[in-house]
Amino acid sequence: MTLHSNDTLISDTLLSKSLIAADYNPTHDAMLQRTLERIALKKEQELRTPDELWIVDHNDVYTLGQAGKEEHILRHTNTPIIKTDRGGQVTWHGHGQLVIYWLFDLHSLGWSVRHLVSHAEQAIEDVVNDCLKNHPLAITTNISAHARRDAPGVYLYANHAGNIANDDIDKSNNKPTNNAIMIGKIASLGFKIKHGFSYHGIALNVDCDLAAFNAINPCGYAGMQMLRLSDFTAMTAKLTDALNYEQVTQKLIDNIAQRHAGLIELRAIAPK
Image (tube, rainbow, N blue to C red; front, side, top):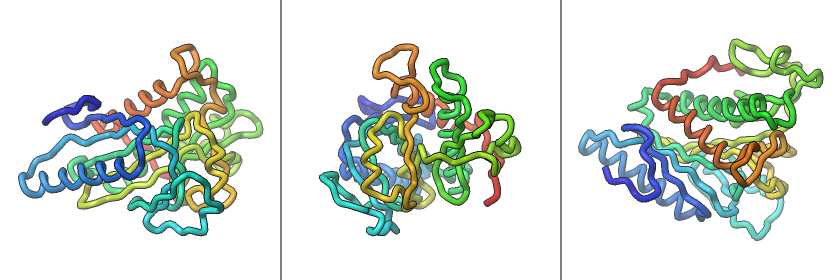
């Protein structure tokens, strides 16, 4: 296997690739082409290639999933709107948002599509909750991140009594109970599966300008409040005691890599 200059080998079966200021269409085309190459190598040569995490800093773009409805675009701006082949409705990508595309061979991992989605959501939960609970400059301790079965993605929940970790979480599945108040969405996800291979992935709002979401119904939900991590824990562009984008990125890569290696098992998934 030949590694390109921006590829980092995480293990024998996983590598990462970083793309900065990436336009959407060339990135998507390269991701699809790489997936088709891997499918062909497996079918024709029975060759398992390393899975890939693409860490992408996108130039501003709205993307509309393959079943996306134009009605969820509330107004047109100078930001391009591109139809794509992932699941889900309309969302925004741009600077300050952490996008990670999961180019995984699900069959070789023994993962179902449900496993993929749950691993993605739980990886985000782990990292965001670590930032919210364990960082010395966290602004609040009564907020926690959780997925929902009825709406893919990761959301922040608050306990008005300020003790969500003890009172408002069902510890059997790490899900908020009815006492917790959902305050908004911090991360979105959408995948495409082709012949058992996944591409597309997750988007975590780290320190982006949330105003871009005002022009759409995010992920098809009218009035959905979008959130960013930097509003809940002190962040900086430099390496200081505060969190920064690179640290959050590395935390998420590390968590995903451990899941890929089978070192982090899925938590029980709450029923709908």
